[in-house]
View 1 (tube, helix red, strand yellow):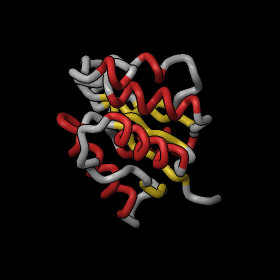
View 2 (tube, rainbow, N blue to C red; view 1 turned 90 degrees about the horizontal axis):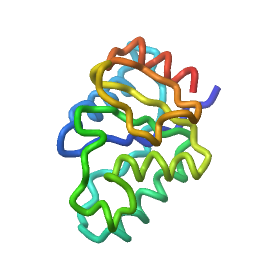
View 3 (cartoon, rainbow, N blue to C red; view 1 turned 30 degrees about the horizontal axis):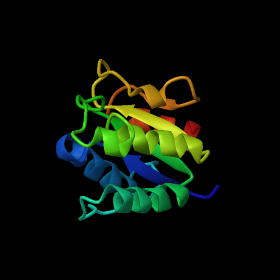
Amino acid sequence: MAKKRIFISFDYENDRNYRYLLSALSANSGNDLEFIDVTPSEIQSYDIGKIKGVLTTKIRNATHTLAIVGKHANSLHPDRVQIGERNWQWWEIRKSHLEGKGLIGVKIERYYDAPDPLLNNGTKWAHSFNVNAIIQAVNNA
């Protein structure tokens, strides 16, 4: 089976270390987590249209979107009106769903509230940031 091409959605300010851990896990041949990370590098722009364009391209190149659900996944972004969603992560998840991508939710802590766009649409879950749980969610997606 071909590797899944996964776009990772995460809160850059608070959860980027978890994104880096996922990339490191994927690169480690000692585990069964296999995917190609198509997440963009940090986008050096404040232009909402440009950011949406880069993210849309990356999401379209993915087969799945994996959302890291941290403490601030539902926080209001200062530019939420221009983004059109509560924050960038909500926008990425909704865009992924509209593009027909499989969704994977990975909670850093089990008790963190999932963003609404991950609910009731077939999202595969890892309810903790645990390698085996993540592998199972990715494989089931």
